[in-house]
Length: 138
Image (cartoon, rainbow, N blue to C red; front, side, top):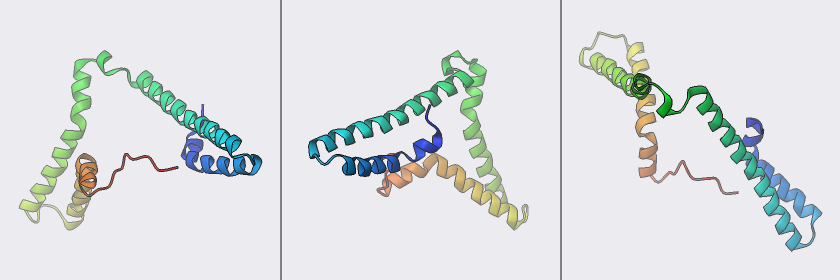
């Protein structure tokens, strides 16, 4: 099993391997074949680590269909209830000035930004032309 630190270094490992291969193989055909094998090896480490992590999560938390319906509802409601609560506290403090001190309002504002950024941040960035799910070019 590959370590997370190794997987974080995968793009650098690919570049390092290509540089090493270019020094060893003078023939362009052999060099290209060795580079493809190296990229496949590093990529398989990433896929294996992802598979192992998913299996761990399923073993630890269980499959959604195997969990009691009450727990399913509870799991699905945590984030929305937290978001509604944060927004409600902030709106209450905004509508009733003086009910919270400025430090609490600043904290509530920051927590609301984090919460709403979780829900809508990726969509907003996509509308601006930023694709967070795009893989970096090797």
